[in-house]
Image 1 (cartoon, rainbow, N blue to C red):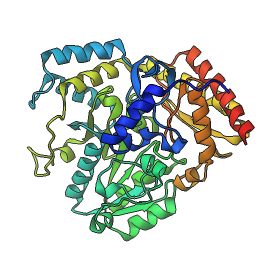
Image 2 (image 1 turned 90 degrees about the vertical axis):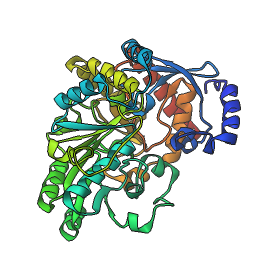
Image 3 (image 1 turned 120 degrees about the vertical axis):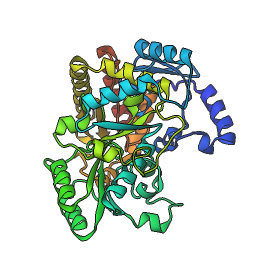
Image 4 (image 1 turned 180 degrees about the vertical axis):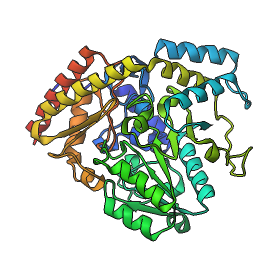
Length: 429
């Protein structure tokens, strides 16, 4: 067992934080309770590494939960943000860069003729749902157990990510009438989806095409095509939540990779290059239901913030065909190495820029399968990784985010740490 890294400064900050921040954090999974330890407080990042306030260095596979596909403090992104900040941080008025970013997204994302920008994926998903209800005149939304589409009332039922981590089966504080308009079905279950869409008048089917909030659990063969078919058959809109997969798994996201397009697409994370930005995108006829052209209201003081738009544009400029080839190769090498290190105790699921190490012999196909994984073993393994200078997502229900900044040497270092961590977990049992 390596010596435990000094984390006295993190411990001191956590004690202070617990007095003024709920749980000492501003987003639940950051508390690291799922892996049985207190959080580390980060001082700075560079490339694929982060450094905590005690001076410990870690190869980072959280990367701001996927927003930093180019790594930390990329010079091109920093230069773009600095140049934008020198002109002013916010105007509450249109800027040229907003137009340029929207044009770039429209070139990349299938079906994205127009955008409405927001400051978070939650807001963008809310807007997509509101558009679907306005367009169809219906109220019911179908979502999948384990999918996370933000923390607003109607879509927190059986969400994954932090909710699965915290073990919250539903959402206290959500009115019963609101929850009644959300129907939850298991991921990859054709029969359940068909029954619901035959019995109910559905406004929208919303799905992560690359679900990564219950761990990475890809769609079964033909399932995304089935979503498109059922939405068309019942007159609902298909909303693809690509907050995670957008610009990560392919230039045009999962829509390009799978060939299945949503009527509306929710984008975030990489769109803002590490700053708060998101958007709902789709055809002109749907987007122009929004004010000021249409009657569906949506607004945001910081929507299209010039710093976030500049960071997003600089990040997208780095994502050419060569970048995606590099990301796919490095993710595959990391995934195969982790699978070999873990042996029969784990299964590793991956696609470009995303992977999950499940502590189960076979990869899960839905949320229930993910919840049957050995969560205690995953937590112990994560603690061992941290002790060896690797920063994994602190929950079995989150994805790892390899970036363009991860070098061959860092991947090899990660695999060495993983082998030792697996051995330590096995020995402790």
